Image (cartoon, rainbow, N blue to C red; front, side, top):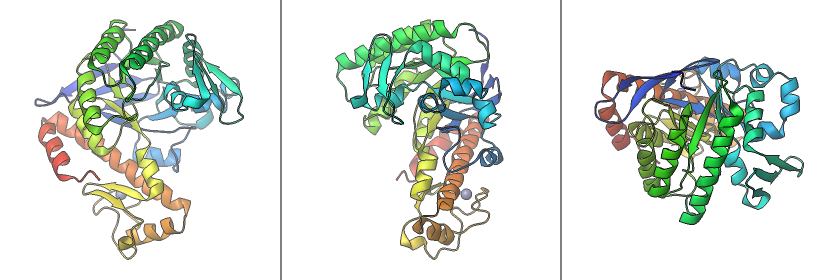
Length: 372
Ligand SMILES: [Zn+2]
């Protein structure tokens, strides 16, 4: 698995940021990239047409949710994710590890795999490293993730060490089960909570096994912002230069800028669409909380000069009205603006890295755009 599907293109002279390109089965993805989360086969509140109009190059789908519905048998019969959903571009699928481990009362972890209770019909289901890989083959994922054991960042050293070792055993079994399928890439997940010795051990162990890419897992699960920033930098520096680095489940625009500085290439997060539903819009001047009555009479777009389809047509006053009335159209419109904002941010980041000016861009963004 040493083909060069990923190539680093430009490097920032003052930070660890870099641009690159991934050649995947369903298309080319420029990095750094933000992947919107399409849990059940669509990004919440928006359609594939919207995503295509925005130019979104890749979305993330959740193995856990697709495993419960439609399930392996029906999805195979329906021809896999791309055929079922008619999404034509690349997808990355997580392994389900994060969702399963966020239900501590309803799952048991064994050496062989994990048993959990389905939220659909309360039946007991088992996922093993082998079945997770086999199901991601059925899905037809461009990028697959290994099954990992995710623990809260606040856990003890012993617990984090145990979870890391099991993650390693399962990663090796995933790699064996995957075999030689160069059209589908398999990424490993570095664990070790907020312990430097464990993170170092995890990165070294996984890097020796030559996965297609490496994810930083186990962050944004209870640690402080300072710890998250530190461990993102710490782990990113331990991962190979020539492989893509993916920070799972993160984050805000500020998190993205800080993590690109640390050398991260890929991100996913539910924030743009979750905040869309709450009526919170990201702009280059910070967040606009649209439910506040101050916006009721504002006949200006969410952001002056924004080229998204929402800002080109609608005012804050109208969006306020829709949100207050509980109209789902509001969730869709604010989500669209947010997805456009994230996409523009990543585009700007890539341009600045290419031009050698990312260091000052990041400093300016982090110092001048309000975070909350
Ligand atoms: Zn806009």
